[in-house]
Length: 202
Image 1 (cartoon, rainbow, N blue to C red):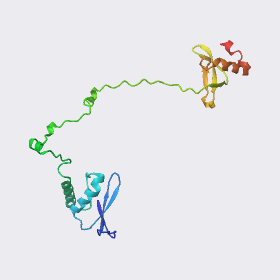
Image 2 (cartoon, one colour):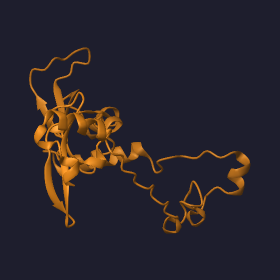
Image 3 (cartoon, rainbow, N blue to C red):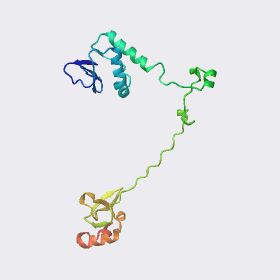
């Protein structure tokens, strides 16, 4: 934190200085109007009202003021925070019976018994992965044919064009894998006389 003095808008409070607070990590900056005569208590009040409410209590304060002034700021901040973060107000009856709650009786809270022993939890069996084949749609036509050797046997395959699909979606399929293969093969052989006797070759 640093103080900037000079011609600044005074306002109703007649401010003549500005307290600059900058965060080392986020680089965020806050400018707080103040007075050059402000003491360590006044600076602690500025922190309490403007900084702690937004950024919580800082772990370290770096200032160009002397260490005594910085230590007084810390002392006043701790006095404002108090000894306890949360003050529990008990009824008069409970205050007489148990004014101090021993730490030894504090137990961790678990939502369920399963969360109490994490390593005893039974890991659920993952669902079976089912691969769904993406069907491109009905067959439009067979384009050509080729003969390959597969598992020691000759087999003919046909590149199939599907309806409403582009050429990059064509697939090489065997005769028994073509939907309505008999119909499309008859049309293909009728349009390609050189493949008229394909069914007789295999």
